[in-house]
Structure formats: structure tokens, C-alpha cells
Length: 348
Image 1 (cartoon, helix red, strand yellow):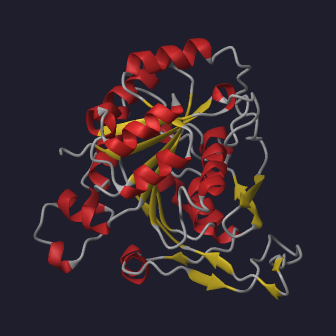
Image 2 (cartoon, rainbow, N blue to C red; image 1 turned 30 degrees about the horizontal axis):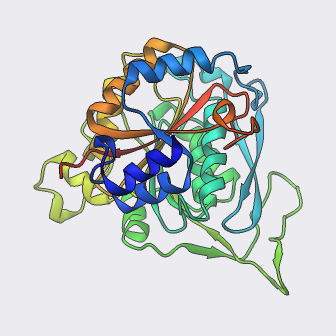
């Protein structure tokens, strides 16, 4: 099935693969994945055949801990990133806030991106935006892997996101406009030769050696801004003066995002239309969307896929129970988290 899906993607024989951009072709040809053609069939497979695979909710997190430590294996730079994320249980439930603690889906997303950053999903110097950042796990991981990342969420969570960005030693821009001019108009990643400073008086971690010389750490950059799904994006993401007279949402496409990432953003069916609409508005023809979603409600998952398939070509990444050898794949063993790749449908 995987070979067939890859061949169809390369030839454009199957409708969901028609008109794919180069990034999508590279990703689905090098990552084991299957096209999602029907939302009902996909939900049936996930919630019947896979439900007996020993799902464990939140197997990788401790939401009661003040700080969660996470290790990311950066294959592209041949180094391991030790990351720390503050959690705030006191914010849970405030205006529907669920992102003040770390969930399994964000860890699966971060590990998946790191696993494939060497080639299938190159991140160094790329432009990335994260929706529903929560504690910022996915976006911080992307920046550590060399991407220029805009982390977004509702205003309540922005102080926590900024705290976690600074905790992990990333360059944080206070002005989205300044960050946009500095980094989105250039694809050259920033090189840092100094190790990041760990929390408190912990010792600095020197970068590993590559041969006789030290390897310089290639690190991206970060900005943090509010973004409410379904609202005009130009209210939150500034556009250039040349675009000011254009339609708000059309102008934001000129930001040319290489990746849009999100984890566990579809937690009830009422927010799905606004979430998918925001994805579609941000995405351009060359944008690759990477989603991690925990399986909780079959109705919510069906709603998400139904809306996605109206605008996007979608593939599910093969992992855990789908792996032929039964071993862990893409950091999701025994997890009830699924990973999807998506690109805008292009009429050809």
C-alpha cells in the first residue's frame, strides 16, 4: 500500500496526489504514509483496528510537574537537544484553555520533525508557524532544529510560551514585524557556537565534536503572537506596505510559510471549522502541513477529516500498530496519537 501511494503521488494518477508541490512529494516518498481518501473509512480503521493496540493516553508526560524535561534527537545536526517546558495547571479550563500543560501529541510531533529533519522534512532556515502552541513544544523543537518559527495561541498562554522559549535559549523577537523582516526575507539559519544556558546554576552543555573540531549549533529564531482561529489573520500577522491595500487574508499568504504545524488542536467539533479555515488561509501552494492529533472522540476526528479533505490532500503517517515489525515508529509506540501530512488541493 505504501509503494502504491508513493507511485501515485509521483505520477499524479490518484486525485488526492494531483498537483503536489516538491516538498510534499519529497515527504510522502520518504516517509511511510497512506493517502486519506474517505473520512468515515479512516475513522473506522483508527477506532476499531487500532484501538486494540494498547493505547496509553499521556504516556510521555507528567502534567502535574512544574517543569517537563524533553530530549530531542537532532539527526540532521547529529546532536541531542535537552529541552525544558514550564507547565501551568492553574490556567486549565480558563476560557477553554487546555494548552497550559504538555500533551503527548506535541511530543510525538516534535520527535517526528526531528527524526525527518535531515532530509524528508528539512527545517534549517525554513519558515514555520505553529497553531495552538500551548507550552510551545513543537515550535521550540522546530527552532532548535534550525527553523524560523512563529508560535501562536490565545493571549492567555503567550506569557507561558515566551517563558519556555527563553528557558530553552532561543532568540525571541518582541516585534513580529521585526522578526518578519529579519528572518522571513532570508532563508539563512543563524549559527550559534555557544551552548544554551540551562535553568538556574546547571552547567552549560558543550556541543558534541564532529571530527577534530566542534560543531556549531544551527539554531533558528522565534516570535510569539496571539492568533485566534477564524478571525482575519492580518489582525495578528503584519503584512508589508505593498500588501496593505490587499485583502487581509490574501496578503498574509505572502509570508510564504514552508510548514504549518499543530498538535491536538481539534478537541471538540465546534472549533474545527475555524481551525481548518485558518490552516487553509495560511497555507500556500508550497506549504506542508504537519498535524498530530490524539484519538479521543470518533465524532470529533471525523469532523476534522471531513473539513480537511474539502481543501487539502491528506496522508496519515504509518506508525506503531501500522509498522510491519511491530516496533516503535516516529515516537508514537502504544500512543493514541496519529500524524498527518497535508497540502492544499491544486487544480491542474
